[in-house]
Length: 322
View 1: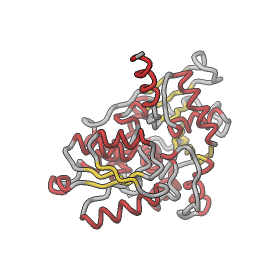
View 2: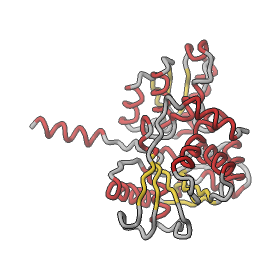
View 3: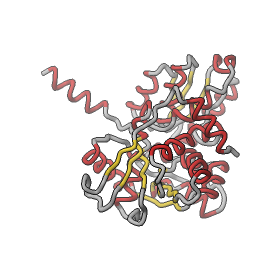
View 4: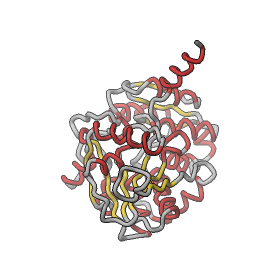
């Protein structure tokens, strides 16, 4: 199990490779919300999500011989993009497995950083199984997106950053996929500020962490169905479940349509273009799944910005030629 010391060491280790992302202050005079809200814009992180924190913390602790051979990962999109970026920066060969459903935009962005892309599997779990088999066959390290101490320590650095930005934070909303982000952040936040309330948000069609918490063990969902593909593993891990059980106060669910409305709200009020997972925390507030009116300093984490904007740019480029 990781400790606060591991997270603090990770922050020192990765500081030259990731951004300290902005905290956006939104008093109620600037939005249609009846209260003061802060948004931590982790969508402004390099490659658009929090994932480089864990990836860099992992790669930077490998010896040169290991890195020279290359690394492997499976991803719904953001982890693979982060691995491709970090591998390019550190001159490490990378192979990224993506589900067959991965958008052409995601595939192109991963390939643009020089990684080899292999598309296989109907969902992340199927893709993960193929990627781990490939890594074992070729003797390459597999960089897990959430079930690894080094990954969790890297993601936990975001919790330290939020406390530095907003020491008075008393409630924070965090989207959950495999649980690596909320697990690492919650450990850091609760260790340093035990009274803070930590609320996780999952899609109704992929509530793998809530199912695990309710059952007291990891549950493999028979099927997942959500547009938030980066929040859609069929199961979390024993590691992320244990930390969530220990440090997370509540998990709520939001529908796909609510996340779309959250995306619209973020665009209208903050000019932030995000993917559905990036709007999950805002969606929980908008729908009333979470009531933040009783908190003095609530923070919603906007954690993924990789919306498929290329089609918009292509449309403008076509128009510019006419």
